[in-house]
Amino acid sequence: MTLNDTINIKQLQRGDSLTVTIERFNHKYLGETSVQGKTVLVPGSIPGETIRGEVIRNWKRRLLLKPIEIIEPSIDRVAPKCQHFTTCAGCQFQHISYRKQLEIKASRLQNYFHEKHPCHPLPLRGVIGSPTPYRYRNSIKLHGPGEPGFWQVLGVDMMRNEECPICVESVDKALQQQRQEHFHQFTRQGILNVLIRGTKIGETYVGPENPSAEEITWLNEELTHPLTDVTYQLIVPAHAFWQGSTPMLPKLIEQVVRPIREFSPDVLVESYCGMGLFGIMSAPFAKEIIGIEEHPLAIEAAKQNQENLNLSNLRIFRAKTEDRLEEFLVDLPSEKSALIVDPPRSGLPKKVLKQILKAPPQLLVYVSCSPESFARNLEALCRETYQLEDMVGLDMFPQTKHLECVGILKRIIDRSTYSPLSKGG
Image (cartoon, rainbow, N blue to C red):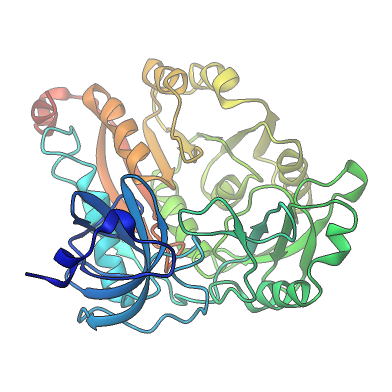
């Protein structure tokens, strides 16, 4: 008889204690096990560990524990650096060695490509790790109600973080200062959603996530091209999308732009181009570049950077990719044509997939922040039209479950020479 046999888990209340052995990770990478038919979730745990935890919430089918004592630790366990770890929902892996984190992410990526997937076996080069597993994130968003904070693990309320050690120092320092002041300058105005962003050269924005037109803030950023060593001075609107990992950004650019340099396209289209980052970095290697983006601030930044850098071969168009991509694709040359896609987490919509398959460029570089939607989209792209020639993961966000990946796809010219398609059905 075990200790848990003497406990009625349904009757456990907040603050009670329970000892469990973790069986697996769930899809959110919380440690998970089953006790008396109920799922027990333990953030900050590793499969195989035995942990004594304090009951945080007890639902009908699930129970949430906060680790209090690691009775039998994993060999992969390390000490987390944040006092809020296991309470804050931002990080999942601070308790796991960085080597093991990369292994977990590589395995996660591979698991989305089943044996009958047209890209199986994967040409995966592995996952590129970050040179700084902490102090890398250049922006955070805090939300109300009440004093702005971060989401709790499986919670409906916000928690008031006093620090965030995965952030660059300027962002963490601004967070700590605002927390000491209880974000009073914002709450007194009824502003509950606050953005903090810092640039590599030391500029910091602390203000509303969604400001009025008069409050739009522009930041200056510096970025050295990883393939040419040329340093670019860029302007970045604080409120539009910008890659969140400062030290990993050059590595991401290198993986995206290197195939463009090798292919040297006559025309390159960058859809979901944001501030035109990949187009700007590809400008030395393509005759003509077309960027498509719908966010007005991103478009303004892209055009301003294009003008400041005197990139005569780059043109930016404000439009939804779904609405205009096809007209650009059908006009591409049959050879020396390339496309970069960097869609949101949900992946490429079916309408965009159909447009690409109708007029497929010779080279397709797919940048994804979601291995799941990436695998799903590649199943359509590589069933008949493309071959996945190269693939790599990039750990843009260490200590978290998130993973960026880049796939290099080549249009199939002679199907008889491509045997993997037969495996895809």
